[in-house]
Image (tube, rainbow, N blue to C red):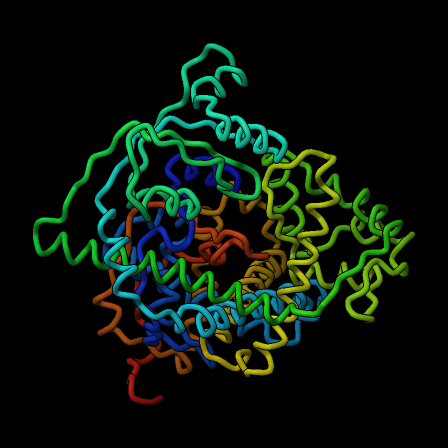
Length: 502
């Protein structure tokens, strides 16, 4: 929807999952049931708040909430109408995509069990972190992006070359960058640990420290201010913030240790010639500008003409080498075709977001190794039965129903001879065609639809546009796009839900 998209992106707030509004944990209260599919309160909020809603449904008014619910129910009804045996769900790339979504949800649950739930709050650590939780530093800093420069800076600092002289020698007579770093606003763990876990002095130089896979930072403390929590509300909030930070850092460490134990004694060896042929073919797809990457993503995943997830060019891209062995994991040999199959299920996640052409092969190796690690972690999740967990099943169904409903909508519009461009004429098409169609589905499935109106009355949604993504996961987009299917404002169908049991 290019016209609507350009308008909405002016007001979009892009949020990394975990930094925005928190939803209650384990809130799996069922708001509506359509056939064998549930819409929980959590899903309602995520679909309404974690993606951009169209202009006709942006407010927190009761009417707009009804449009949101009717849209989600319409999506489920269209999925029911298309049925399980359809071209989308029989298309192998779609099957692998949905399997990948399910397996990502399974690994999240594994992280919860092996990370979050094993964190034990240490009183001494809590007190130490709490002591710095109101602090804001003023620093000078500079960054470098290669290890040779890091070694040179470290050597010069060890030989008493000043912070300012090192900067001047590298960048000339320009002002050293300066910034404020607050405990409750700094999101980089390495910087956070360097500044907020011990007493520092004015003039103290810290680093170079590895801020991420791309950047090393050297900092000089210019001064700081402390803002103590005074009121009971402030103290409670600060206590909660400190506990959240410690839980996140500790759970991440615990899960990494668990993953390291899983990968112990597993050795990955690449076939040099085949790997570099593969890297050469793959590199152009990953060295695009952000704008081109978005265009390729949209063309690849949301091609409304035939919903094909793999273009003909990509299908033929590796024909010459698809049977060649590319890697060996403890005697288990993967061909290029095997690896490509895994990549559809688990798109590559590169540790470096910005890299030169010469760095690509090494970063590709690391991304493939991370894919293999996740494959072993997923096997553990399957053995534990995490694929049968309700949150995992709901996650897969959410994406499956979205895709099937999108296909069903397009098929319906084609069947009635609708030729207008939905991206630019969606409001007219909804008013002229889709509202009537959705009404007919409401009548058809009314006896299979249950709505908890008491729960619905209590729901509130934000008016802020958000597009929520997760970092460092194969499928970063958190929820499907809002279902642009109806502007119906009435809940005059279905039956009242009894939460005890249907």
